Image 1 (tube, rainbow, N blue to C red):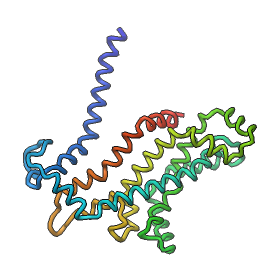
Image 2 (image 1 turned 135 degrees about the vertical axis):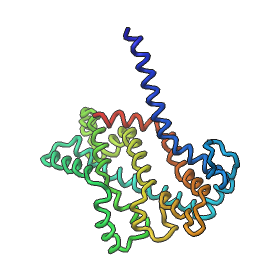
Image 3 (image 1 turned 90 degrees about the vertical axis):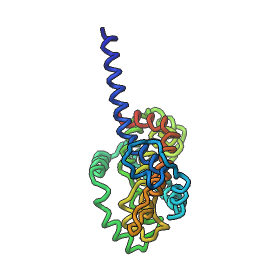
Image 4 (image 1 turned 120 degrees about the vertical axis):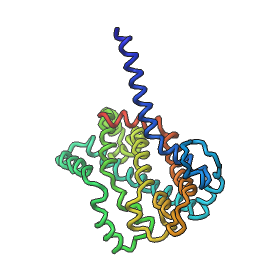
Length: 277
């Protein structure tokens, strides 16, 4: 009886998952389809995924000719990698202290971390802008990186993972003469690889796709991040050429897809070990 009931339940579950996947993937599939079409095939009344008139070479070539697309990709890679490295540099010792060290201010400090999770990233944007403007760091890599180097979510995420690490491992390291910072970087860092991979994917996706902050501080097209760079593909005077615009969106989205596919096993493992503890 249970097996008979479990089969329809499993079928329904898979149907719901497939429906959700179709809803999530449909915009990206349509974007890819538009990036391959000729202009008169984009505005056709017929709905078809396979282009009738192919113009992929022109669209993708124009995406690199109209704007410095290679520079946007380089900016995105440099800024997101720098942000992630700095976030881990600060979050790892903080998470270790909150998870494994016993001191009087641990609970109030962790409460502040939880409170920081409730503050939207847009709230401190104006103070950050004023501070960086006074320091002369607008329209610079430093200006793009500095507001994001402290991640309260990263501290919380890694702290949850560190709670699963046995205390006996740390006691053995201390008996071997290791200091606390040495434990953090030689023991906890390798152990936290799944959690760091999951956090790294989230951090890279968020900052690669960030449009709000670069829009505030970037004043020259050469310093634009990928999401902001797609705006420069628009030509309001001559009208928007949607083929190159969609091609640019595909080029900007592709690195994130490849990055996730390469790290999906670690991502799922990190989500499982950190998210439910």
